[in-house]
Amino acid sequence: MNGISENFQKKIDMLVRKEVIIKLVLFSFLFLIVLVFLGESRRKYILSESRHAFSVAVMEEKNLFIQEVSFQYKAEYSPNNISAEEKKNWGDQFYFIKEDSCCNRLDSLFRQELKGGGLELQTAVSRTFNGKTIASCQSDFFEKATLLHEYTYRKDENNQSDIILRAYICLPFYLLFDYKYFYILTLVYVLGVFIYLYYKQMRGKKDANCVLQPQVSMPSSAIENDEVTQERNIVQTEWITVTGDYLWDVKNHILKSGEKKIILKGESLRYFQQFVVAEHFFLNYGDLHALYKNRGIEESKDCIYHTILQLRKELKIVDVKVESIRGVGYRLLFD
Image (tube, rainbow, N blue to C red; front, top):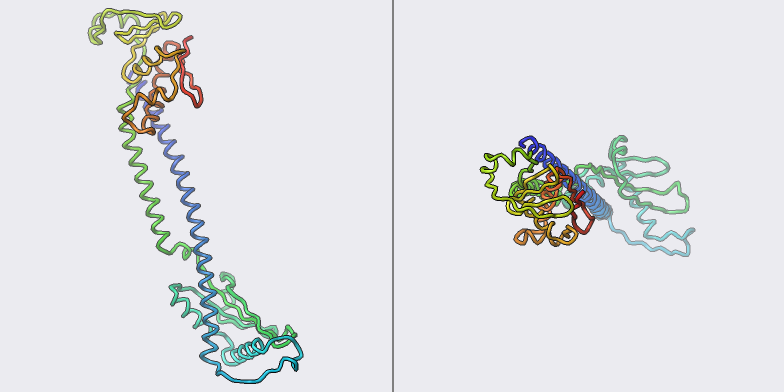
């Protein structure tokens, strides 16, 4: 009997472990989806803030190093439709190419603006003029950098004379998760896993109270033995017919069919007593949940599942099946 009990318990433990693993995998997958969403939101935020910082740096460079001048401009005498403001901006950039060809000054202002916004990133700035590009960094930086913004300044319709100003940042993967919400979410995930495992451990102890060790049939000789009868306190038997050749001893809780007999105890006994008095030996889920009025719905589900599993193993000895009717309940089938 101990061997059967151990095998039964091993199967229960295996089912519980499988359930735990499945739920942890689903929980981890959900956690990963949330991480991807937060990472993408963080990336968009950093790019947006960096574009703004670069725009501020461009204006600050002009304010610091370009003197304000006044001039008259008559658009009717212009050979093209390019505005005076755009031509002036081109002139400012042409001046910066002469004064700071490697864009180090603008790059420094750019990093300063980012740092003021709480972002410490690797940056680079480049200017392209007459087909030649000069940047504030080494060429290998562009392999890992992200193009952030691009301005084109014109003075005429000749594209060769355009000045193209570009800004780059290096956005490491770890930086997408280097903020408080990521750490809070990770903490919630870890705590959630520990709480769930602790809950399942406590639930397992409760299940032990509602699931007894499975019983096995005893030979007729053992039942008729006076010593065994005295140990089990079996009184005079009073057999009633359940169906066919199945007899049920109400007092001693013995079910027999021909030479096969079993003694039911605990939850198995309580369930069987409900089945044999029910119409067509059928109990719906509501009938079974009613047996656990003082327990939560999830706890009663677990008790029902484990007890039905135990009852199946016991009744199989006398060729009785517990049929599951999906979404409705269970029914006893007597062969």
